[in-house]
Image (tube, rainbow, N blue to C red; front, side):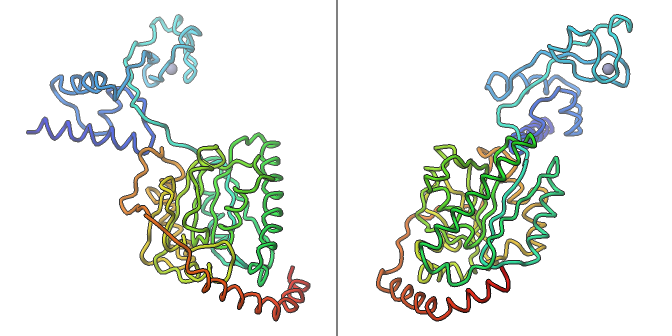
Length: 365
Ligand SMILES: [Zn+2]
């Protein structure tokens, strides 16, 4: 009975390591130290052997530094040098050879680092969450990942016109290309991860579709309050290597995204409904409104240890399976007549408000 419980603990520890992509390589001793259990019989060795025969673990040839208090793992390349890279002991002088040790490597991908990030926000949001978000991101990840918050100034009635979207996409693409070049000049060859919100999500989707910017490549993408049409084909961009993966954080109480298709051409309520493409991971949050995910308490939760965003950004994707994730079967845009009526009202508003919009921009570019 007790033995079974121990095996369950070992299994759980191994699954956890594969899930977070950390601690995949280990020695028998270090593994047992983590679970805080030292079996008096050979049950652990037998369990390891079984895992090796199942292909869950592979054995690696390794050595340990013989100096007391050091014990650093010496790999194959280092053993010829005859010097411990940690304590500097010369093994010949010390009079003892490195101690041979069997190590194990669990099947699975390692966790990934966040090197830098681009945030594309919604219209005219100068909210406190931007600072909160960039501060949290920059402090959380290794190497203090820099964050570029893309600002496109004040956009008001422009969103109602399709041709205005294209010029905003062009500006966005040029800015991102510059940022990627700048990162490369500073020895950062990694693709940026991306967080997009509201109208910024639509601009990002149009950017992915644009031939002009087919050279831009991204890491993992998080959409919040997305107004991209729910039938957007993400898998095409994942398969071509333009993006690595996408997480759509759905707000069940998000009202603006539901009305977007009636006023903003080419948009849809994916921030409320989800995406139909099974390559996209839709995760709902019942309490979220349009910017719910950016509330300070929610940023803390999502980016905190074990939080949804943290897991999505850092863990191996083959183990990233949020319990509430869902698949949207089908989506059709609302009846074209209703959308046209909405668009017509939109153009009327545009005609009436455009002069004010121009004046406003003169004073607040
Ligand atoms: Zn040493």
